[in-house]
Length: 260
Ligand SMILES: C[S@@+](CC[C@H](N)C(=O)[O-])C[C@H]1O[C@@H](n2cnc3c(N)ncnc32)[C@H](O)[C@@H]1O
Image (cartoon, rainbow, N blue to C red; front, side):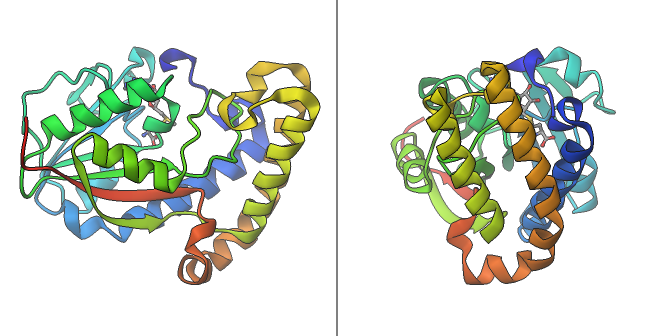
């Protein structure tokens, strides 16, 4: 992905901007629920992009924040020198270097599950044993589409299996964006994508796949933008009553003590 990553707002201006504000709002409110775990910690964000979260992590009490991203051009936007261009599959840090490792919608964009497994093993390697924690905010709803780039289709239970197989122990999981209307929209668009011959709607960057895919995704973001306001207003209730509708989850993990 890397330099090819484009955010929704660049591709569909107003609906994209509204959808992005919605996404940032729900991500921030979900991350805030675990912010006490960041206090006084050295943090690495993998796939940090422009460093959007750095100020929040510092404001929430982090001692130091580092970031890596595969894209040199997006890192150029980060307002700190504590960033490096590198891949999640080969982190340029020694073992047990960080108290906390964070990803925010990064692993879901890796090109294959093999890369994902390698990245999870790297996360385990750089985490301090015992007190070290990883917070991974990632898509966990296989029936999702992406405008900008391919997405890995991984259910919540498959994430659990991947963590176990790669030496990470799941301590807790937290819903990010459960919404009845967004859930129905995702299901409908996923099925429509299949119907018009887009095959695995959940695995493709539809906007890049074809012009009909691009029209479908424009409509998707248009409706999503419109639904974002009621979804935000009801988010507190839906997180409590129907967390399973959440497309994204935050996983809190620690490294298995045995092994490397
Ligand atoms: C959806 S963006 C999220 C950026 C940031 N976490 C945020 O919330 O603003 C995904 C980021 O992952 C980065 N990325 C993709 N593949 C990567 C890899 N193999 N190693 C490191 N970063 C990667 C992309 O360049 C992009 O900046």
